[in-house]
Length: 205
Image (spheres, rainbow, N blue to C red):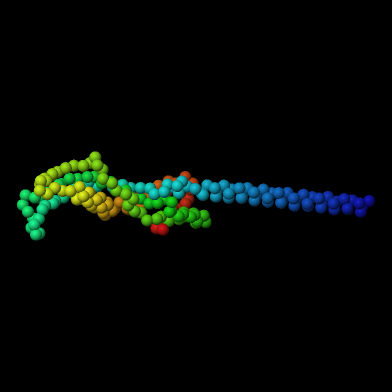
């Protein structure tokens, strides 16, 4: 009888040990499942931030008023002939836009150090255009012997645009475009990351 009790107790102990082991496996599996679930959720949040579909975007515009003074005259053997001089003085506002290609941005996250590293492509002038409604004529003095041609006038307007670009860049257009690009990107990252905990570091690509 005593031996039977010992065997019964041993069996109960074995069953109890197996149950404990099974429960431990289930708990570990559930814990792992919860952990991986969170990890996958986190990954899905950061795969797309919106700016990757924006393409080339102007982040700053400069408005320059350009005055053009065009002169022409007939000459004979390098000597200007009197009364053949023509002159036009007029102005246009030129809009110069600068920005970058958002699709070329590269970024990564250093989770242990809470740092978001963003590599930006070159900030550049994207386009410029004359505001035709801003035209002002200051002087129109054309000689019947030497009129300013459409080709000469077109060349003058092209030069106006080029000068406007140089003036805009010289007055900090690209720096302002870079600053605004960073501000736009910060707003995108703020929608996914807590920027009180994460630092964003911008650098050139």
